[in-house]
Image (cartoon, rainbow, N blue to C red; front, side, top):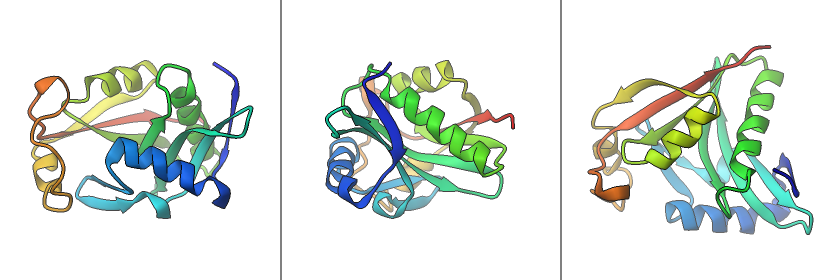
Length: 163
């Protein structure tokens, strides 16, 4: 890992972050646990390479006891950007006195499930039919996801944080 730094996103980063979200989510909106988020309105961490280019972004939302990772995306997977962004989000949560870092992924996203579990997040719940409900808020969500897996449920993962 290396060759980049993680910091809070600034206004100069907006176009690059929006481009990452367009590529990953088809635009600035994601739906998780029956909430439609506009990623442009959420606090965002960015990974920036030595030339100043944004190579990853993590949008988050603070709750009473935890920091929810709403979106994490790397320009090029496998280079450590996602790990660094998750670590920075955990540090942000700890600094705010929050007890956990958590997120949602979908039942088809085996690559993400593997990634998150290797970074200390644990599966704590399944919301059956959550993606089916999400299609009411974002109709372009496909019926079939990665690896030909029917897309229906949300998986809830969390990492408890030590002070």
